[in-house]
Length: 98
Length: 98
Image (cartoon, rainbow over all chains, first blue to last red; front, side, top):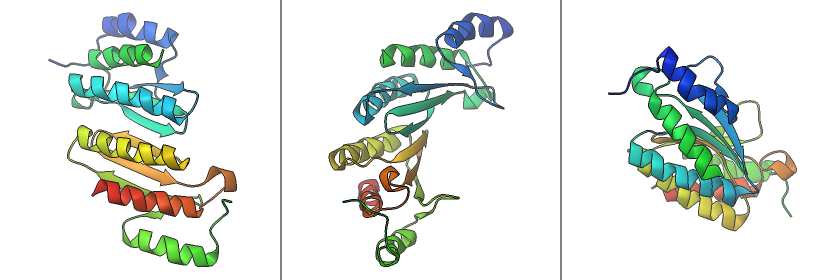
């Protein structure tokens, strides 16, 4: 069952993400990161790879794309904040962006 | 050469788009529309089709996706506002969303 991250979960799951460039979103229990690519095809290729994992895991990002830039926000609607699913998808997105 | 839409161009190109659900973006010389689909796969399939045309035409949308919803904003960076390329891409996106 999906649940809000506990204090321990936040420490173990979020701190490595903060070191990797993720940050808390302003005014929300959500994490956000901006990914920059060489051009639109790079950005959209990244989004496509992420989309397949998001759909497979049933957990989808909020994201915005302008040309070579993709800004992602992750939060879990069902629990009204961050869950382990967000940390998992964030790690996957970092891996897919490499 | 790409140039800002003239008054005549705005009348002929934008008015049909306004009838199709496009609107002027707040505080910018840009047009915006929100497209809703059944689910994430519908939304991302639409984005993928649009991405191929955008890349082919060298003219890219600003867009935001949250699950089944895609919010699009079109404007032409090079001219600092709306050009015929935005109207062309808007019409194509309407067609691809059908």
